[in-house]
Length: 76
Image (cartoon, rainbow, N blue to C red):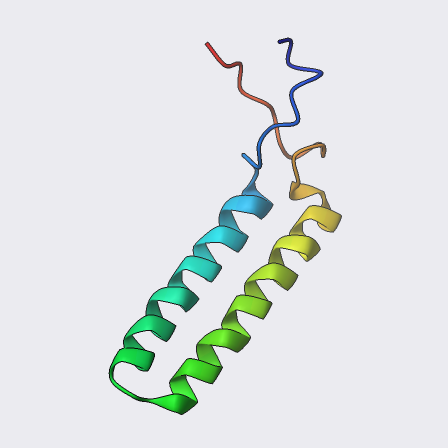
């Protein structure tokens, strides 16, 4: 498969940032749920949404898979 037909599988700054924020949110939310802290569970749910929005905004700003700030790595 050549590099031009490869969709990149999300290896971009936008994707990495979004996934990191969402993973942190899920981790916080899991512990908050476990320790019965409802306000923190809802705050972590909001942080998941923030992660999605940040990823979309970064992709629109040029940090997505098909944008100039990102260079695809060849898969060996």
